Length: 520
Image (cartoon, rainbow, N blue to C red; front, side, top):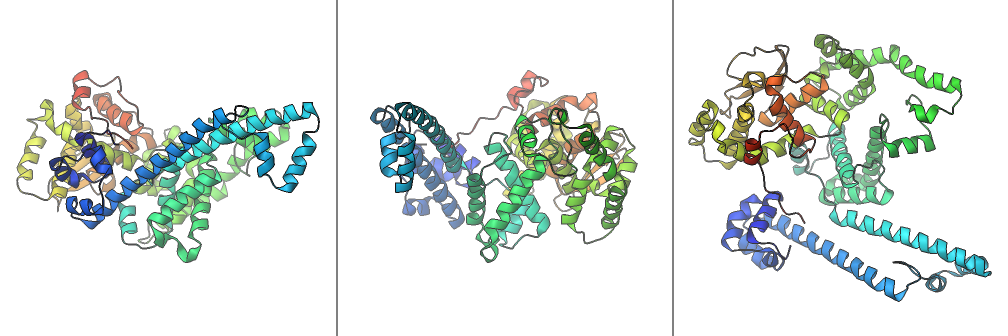
């Protein structure tokens, strides 16, 4: 950070949701070195809002703590090897002997009486010390770099009110923490106990009111561990998951990989294969009946809805893969009409938070999309420019630009916009499509998702609408029409973090390139 330029500091501020500070920092020419030299008095002069002051100082302090921790670790690495050449990055046997308690010393001396035993013992100690050193170093890196994820808007509102969330909101928080931990762990679904502790501590330090009666730590940690177990259960193609399933066995009703069951008796394999059939009987009917009845209520038990949707996902995916009529699927599982359940189903299938990804896409690319020559004279862009003159509030202007960018995506790629969105007109196609009325009227705008010319869900804004459209193609396994293939490919490449998709035209890729922000 000390080598950053003023532009890099400004990019970092935007990335840290402190974009309002950019003009002042640019005016005062605050570089990376100057940023690290700021004290409390300087920050008060630069930043007016107390909340922004606190966030800025916290980010700087975290960076300095992280840097000092890595520097001390590097120093230990450099000094350990020349001083103790027998053990790389570890400690010698003599040091172990002096630092150990009397009982451990006695055990150590008994094991090292003979020369052969001594050599073998040292070899084992070297391997053990080297392994534990790298494990500690990896944990230190993970600890120093971890930060809580950016929660969705509704979760942020609940947390900002400092109210204890209800059960459904707790599940959403846990889901985002699990997905974020998986990202930090490089895709692994097996965090260790220390990593669970780090995440839960970070959550309770940021939001102390979640620590109910002093028992919050254990409750949140237990919920997070259960979430990882739930995510691991249906996985059949991950080597680490399969290895642990074969080692520790399965719970009742959990399917096995054929490679794990090859050496088992025939009667055991028959039992494992017949259990899903049992689930499709009376128990499945009870769950489906309950979901249909609960959907008709005004106040719903979302915790139980999530549980029963999880239990019935296997038969639901089977119906969709068998191309069952959409009306039959929605009749049995009406909660798929709810945007939250649609996004949740997408996350269960792909392990991706479609709503969060869509927010990032529109925030990053909206300005670039609106500046492209291909959409300069588009009626939607003209309508946007007229409405921008009537407002000055930054939030409203940002909302309008993101809405326009969403509606203009097919025109950017030369696709058929009628297969993507119907603006102030009737829906005429059977594939998933958005219906938008009064897109730039903040008080009367309406967004809806249509499938087979029937309304599936009412949506709050352009971000939710775009996320629901992408999710609908995946959840209901609907082939993408060729005339909007490039638009959806672009969106999916960003959602699934696939860079530079080959299907995009060169001029479009150049127009949509976004500079990579420096990271701490």
